Image (cartoon, rainbow, N blue to C red; front, side):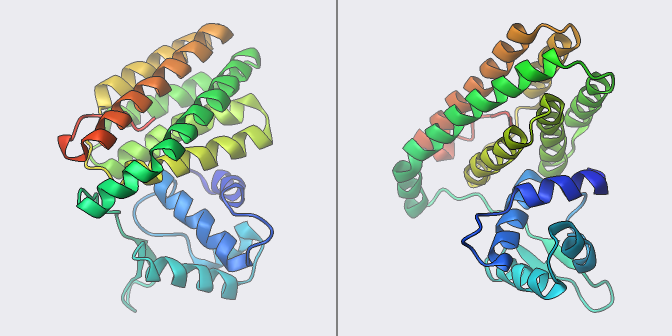
Length: 250
C-alpha cells in the first residue's frame, strides 16, 4: 500500500480510548502485520509511524518494544537499523486445539459479522461507481494469482477487500471491515492451512465483474458466498487442525 493509504488505515486499527497510547499503537501494528499491509518485513521508520498515529516517537518505541516482547518483531543490527516483523508460526499442539475449541463461537461470530459488513460494503461500492475501482481490483487479483509466498498473497488479498471498503465511502464501515478481517486472520495464521489461490482468484474475478456491471445485489451475494466458503473450510480445520485443507484468505 502507498504511504498515503497507510496513513489513513493504521489509526483505524488502534484500540479504544481507555488504553494507553502505546497500547493502542501496538494493537494497530499487530493488526497491520496480520493484514500484511507493509511491503516486505520491515516496519516503517519510527518518525513515519509517529506522524501517522499523531503520537511521539517515545510512544512508538514503547509499542515496538511490546511487539518484540511478544515475538512479533525484532530489531535489526546497527548497520541496517529498523524493526522487522517475524512470521507467526502455525500450531497444532494439544493446548492450541483446546484454545480453538474454546474460541470457536467467537470465530464464527467474527466471520458472520464480516459477512454482514462486507456484503453491505460491496453493495454500496456497486451503487457508487468509481472509474479506478475495477482497475485496482483486477490489479490486486493478478497480484494474488502471482503470489509466491503467504505475505504476498495476504497483502494482495487485503488490497482487494480494502479497495471495496474504500469505494463504499463510509469511514465507520471501512474501520469495521479492517478490524474484523484482522481479528479473523489472527486465528487463521495459527492453523497450518495453505492458501487456495485458484479459488480466491476466481471469487475475486466474479465479484469484480459484478461490480463493474453495477449489479449491486449480485455482487453482494457473491461476496457473501466468498465469505461462507471461508467459514466452511476454516471450521473444518478447527475440527482437525492437522488436516491442512486449503482455504482462501478472504
